[in-house]
Length: 143
Image (cartoon, one colour):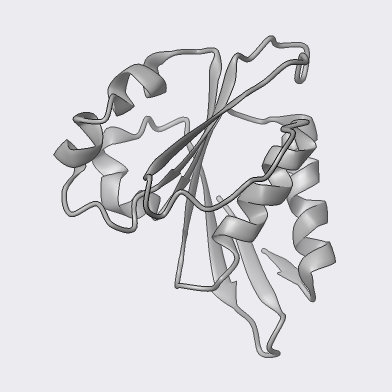
């Protein structure tokens, strides 16, 4: 568990994971406002995504093209997916999720991943975000 005292610590954790890229599928879980989107924005910025990075709450899936090698691999896209509004996994499948997931050239950041747990491979890295004791404090638990 990482105790993130502020947004700068969250940025450090996201940048560290993006630089090491221990996997390509990141399953993010936690309560509203616990830091999933902020973490995702820092992670995508560390992957050299240009332009504005916003939450895909209403679009559900956002695709960001990647232009430089990451960890010796040539990934094509980073997908930021928000399952908050998903009522059942089939809804995500109807949006082409299986094709996105199966493409080894894609990196996926999936918020509210517990809603689609049965669709994710065992190789996904689960990251839980919890509110800490102080207003800006977060606990980040990497499984």
